[in-house]
Image 1 (cartoon, rainbow, N blue to C red):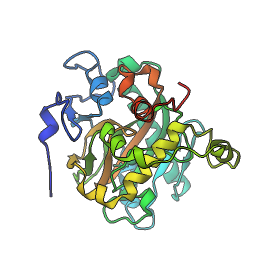
Image 2: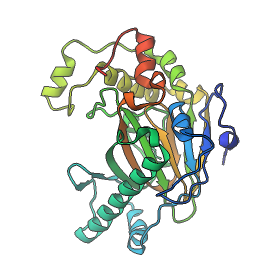
Image 3: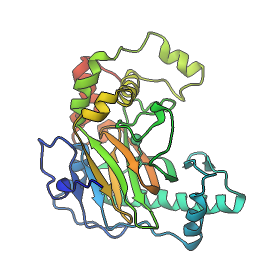
Amino acid sequence: MIENDNHGDSCQGEEAIVPDVCRLAVTEWNGPFAQPEPDYAVRVLERGGVVLLPQLEFPLRDVERALMVKGSSPGSRKNVSFDPAKGHLRGSTADDADQAVLAAMTRRYAAASKALLGRLLPHYAGALVPGRTSYRPFEVAGRSSSWRKDDTRLHVDSFPSSPTGGRRIMRVFSNLNPEGRSRRWRLGEPFEAIAAHFVGSIHGPVWGSATALRLLGVTKRRRSAYDHYMLALHDSMKADSKYQRYSKQDVFEFPAGATWIVYTDQVSHAAIAGQFVLEQTFYLPVQAMLEVERSPLRVLERRIGRKLASV
Ligand code: SIN
Ligand code: FE
C-alpha cells in the first residue's frame, strides 16, 4: 500500500506538483472554527488544495449502520443520490423503509455540510448553492465501467447533462467505512498544467450544438463554451492511458472517520479504493471567489483567448 503523507503539513507550497492536503483540527460540524489566518480554508481550496478534517466524523444512527452492511451486498452497486430541489432519492433499489433511512441520512448530511461550509468558508456566505447529496456504498476497486464513467482514472469533474455555465463545483466527502478502511485517491497535477497539456488538441464547440443539445433534452440548460471545454478535458484525461500512467501524481489515503473538501472541477482526482462515503455537491458563482483568476473558467479563458461563459 502506498501512502504519501508528505503534503500533510506543508500547505504553503506554491510550486507543489500535486495538490497540498491541508489539515484542520475540526471536530464539530457547527464550528466555530479556528483557522491559522482568516479565509485560510478558502485560499487552500482556491489554490487547488484539499482541506482535510481528519477528526470530523459524520455521526451515523444504528439503523444507518445496519443498512451499510446490507448496502455492500453485490445486488446493490449503485450510488444513491438525493436531489434537494426535487426532494427525492435516485438510484436506490431498497424497499420503502430502507429508502426512508437513506433519505434521512442524506438529508442530514446535506444540512451538516451546509453548516460546516457556512462557518469554515465565511467569504462565500450566501453564495454556495447546494446540489445533490450522494451515498456511495460500493467498493471502488475492481468495479467495471466505461472509460468515461470510470472515476478510478484521473479527471476533473464536469457533468454532461448539467452545465455549470462557469460556476465552481465544490464537494464535501466523508468516509464512513465501518471497518476503518481509507478512501484511496490519486491526486494529479494542477489545473494550469492540465489545461496546458490538453487544450491545444480540443476543438471548440460546433456552431449551433449548444442549442441542439438543449432542445434534444441532453442538457438541462444551455451548454456554455466553458462547459464544452471542461467536458472535453474530463474526457481527454480519462481517455489518455499514457497520461493516466505517466503524469505527475500521488496517492493519498483519506482515513475512515475523516471529512475533506475539494474543488473537484479544478483538482485532478481519481478514487481507486474504499467503500462507503457520503458526498455533498455545492456550486459557487465565480464572482464569489476570493481570487477569481484562479478559477478554471479564467484559466481556460486566458489560454483560449476568449470569453467562455457570460459571467
Ligand atoms: C470522484 O469524484 O471522482 C470519486 C470520488 C469518490 O467517490 O471518492
Ligand atoms: Fe470526480
